[in-house]
Amino acid sequence: MKNRFFALIIFVVISAAFYFGCKDTITGTQVDSVVIPSSNVSYSKYIQPVFNVHCTDCHGGSTTEDGIVLVSWGTVMSMSPIYISPGHASNSRLVWDVQGKPGYDPMPPLGSSYKSLNSNQVNGIMTWINEGAKNN
Image (cartoon, rainbow, N blue to C red; front, side, top):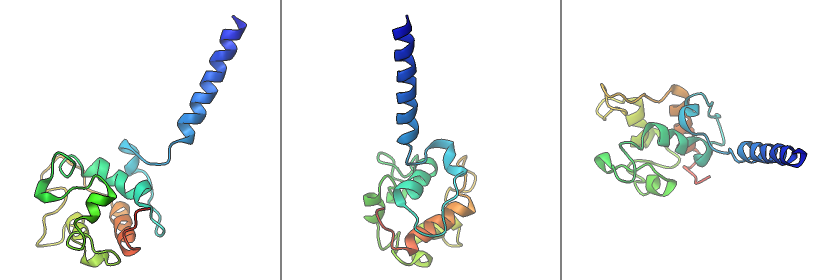
């Protein structure tokens, strides 16, 4: 009995270490509470999780509204320079869409059940683009 208890304790400790040690990206509802830094924005750590939570239902692998696919850095950059202009967020349609710039379709669409990006997420996307839209 003592050996089983000891084995259970070891299992719990190793499982906890694995779970907490491997969380290097943000998922689910956590994405809205994470503060994206104002510089050195990592695509994999900050931008793709925002896309995964807010965008890929309509702009995912099997659903490509308006031909826009946001499932990976490669698919995002395949639309460059029309959708993303590396180094120039102010010239990027992605930014115009998430900002709801007049003349462009606001994302998410008005009246949809999808939650808009918060200002930190929009600024994070802009910073990532201005820093060269790197695959980092």
